[in-house]
Length: 109
Image 1: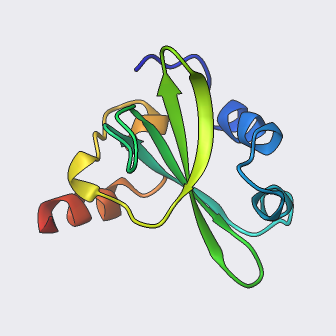
Image 2: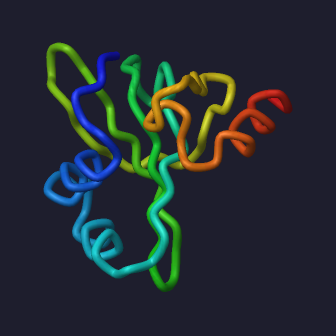
Image 3: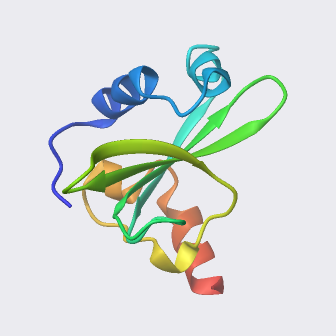
């Protein structure tokens, strides 16, 4: 999985390619947005990518951003996080905004 953008560019791409209108509204609402890091594979996919936690006034959305060589990048909603597939790394998008939290969850299984 190669990286061609930073956090701001990823969030800008997600704003234009949100999986639903409610996620798009939440992205521009001013509530916290947390990049959980790189995962390989993502839930419900064989592709690597990132998971982004998007908060709104009344709920949280877990959005997967898959990097697929054949289908191109895509975003979709997920119901769970498979922490065992967390990749981490030194790049901020792989590491995520709270790497200690992700590593702890990965260790717990």
